Length: 298
Image 1 (cartoon, rainbow, N blue to C red):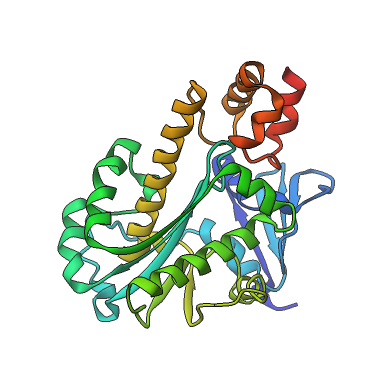
Image 2 (cartoon, one colour):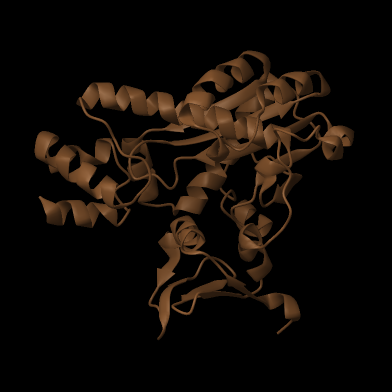
């Protein structure tokens, strides 16, 4: 076993929850004194009651990287000096995979040198660091100038596809399709970045049956903090999520909670009481554990 095959980190409870939400489809029976254990491809992740989280396996470093104390760059203050020599660039990000209600949205966008003034003026950064109000104001301006491809997968479609694909397979196929679509609008730059959610070999293994596969991609964790194309894609994807949620709330006459916490369970129970359990799959991702809690509550 090499030194790089094990990572042990001390995570906050919020970070533990973020880790669990990212890979919960791969949950396994937890060993003694562990809060949970996850077994994604090429890694075993064990979160212990002591507060330590151990990543073990061939790709331990990849799965641990988003939680390691690596200095990040704020897009609002950085002139992106480190990326000026690799413009134009294309980047992609996804939104909605951790939300019980609402769609999964993936966007791929191209940023050129000519776009950088707008990127800086708008204070583009990862959508998780902006309020929904800010996103509603910024994203349409980006969408007017940038070449982008936005995919929005509604809940009925997501639930049907998830029967034969795990979440990371769905994400890989959506990122790839977003780039395929973007390539029809503009020539893809030689530098393409994905905010890494799986090791590169695993990512491409999910695409082995796809007719068109975009290759030569650079995979990097926390890419939205370092590359304006990923930051812009993150914003546009979040905007697509918000607009779709608006339409859902208008259709069903109620507000939907974001995330997957206890407030979501209460919201789901309210929805079932108003519209029936048979309609839950039209607004929610049914494989989440929230579904069992909601059914038990009504």
